[in-house]
Amino acid sequence: MRPTYRRFKELREKAQDKLKGRGVLEQQLTDAVCEIDMMHENEVPEYKWGSVQSIIKSCRTHKAEGDEGIFRASINKMTYEQLKSLKRAIELL
Image 1 (cartoon, helix red, strand yellow):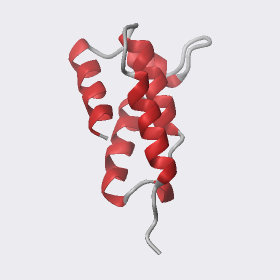
Image 2 (tube, helix red, strand yellow):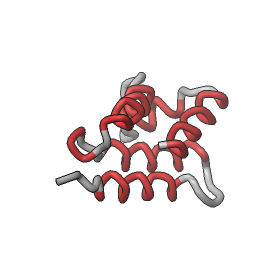
Image 3 (cartoon, helix red, strand yellow):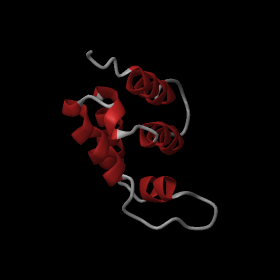
Image 4 (cartoon, helix red, strand yellow):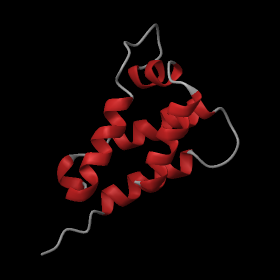
């Protein structure tokens, strides 16, 4: 039986929905990456797993400071071009 990847599709849609609308780009990206982080390898199509890992890895570059999480700390340190690239990677997921 072929897997349906239902959970992957749900989490991907949630992550992409977080990027829509107006708001602070850093907060939108943090929320979207948190959704993506909930994906497990067996829930993601094999050809998409590398993209998921790349997104997570790019958001684990700095230590968390205070009450902000590791994703927020890393996203806060990104340049505008890196933020746009991350947003595009999530949109293409």
